Length: 317
Image: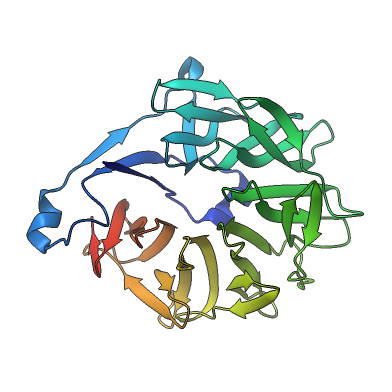
C-alpha cells in the first residue's frame, strides 16, 4: 500500500502573493497506520519522488492530492500560471482551464475527483472555482457585494472553503456549498490586506483556517457546529491551521515564544509543538495529516528545507 502526500514547501499564506514555489509529490512506501515504527524501522523506509510533467518546460507546483493519486496544482512560465489535474495511474495531465486571466491555481481535490481553487477573470479579479473531468471550470461566486473569492479546501461531499473579499472588506472565511456562498462570520479585521480565510474542511464539516486576533495578529481557528475555537499559539503572536483529518486532528504552524514558527498538531484540547529536524531548526511548518494521524511538512535552515514525516511521536526526515 502506498501513501502519498503533498508537501507545501512554503507557508500556505504565500499563495496570496502567487510567488513561484517548487513542490514535490512524496510517496512514502510502507504500511502507514498499520506498522508500529521503531527508530530502526523508520530508517529503513524509503521515499520516491515523482515529478509532475509539464508542457513546454514549464515549472510546476503541486498543492493537493487525493487517495487515488490524482494531483492538482499549477504550472508557470513567466507571469502565466495554469491550473492542472494530474493522474498518477495513467500519467495524464489536464489543463483545468481559466476565466481568461493569467493567475490560476488548483488547490485541492477530493476522492471523487472534484477540484477547487481560484482563477483570474478578464478584469483581474480572482474567483473560486469547481472543476472535474466531467464538468468544465465553473465559478463558485462571491459574497454579496464582493468581487473576489478563493477556494483552498474541499471535502468528499463536495463542500469547499476559502474566502471572499470586497472593496470595503478584507478576506472573509466562507463555505461554498449547495450553490451558495456562506459567510462563516469569522472575518473581523480592518487591517489592510489582512488574510482571514478557511483552508480545509473534513467530511464532518469541521473547518480550519486563520482569523484576526486583534491588530495585525492572526490565530488558527476550528469552526464546528456553528461555534469557533481559537487555537491560540505556541507562545508567539501568530498561528494558522492548514489541514484537518476525519478525526478532527488539526495541523498548522505558529510563532513560538522565541520567535520562529513551529509546526503543531491540535488534539481537541491543546497545541503540541512538533519541533524541528536536527540541522534545520530555523522554523517548521505542518502541511497535511492523514486519517491515521501521520503528519507531513517541512523544516527549514538558512541553507535549505527538508520535508518531514511526524509519526508515532517521532519527527523523521
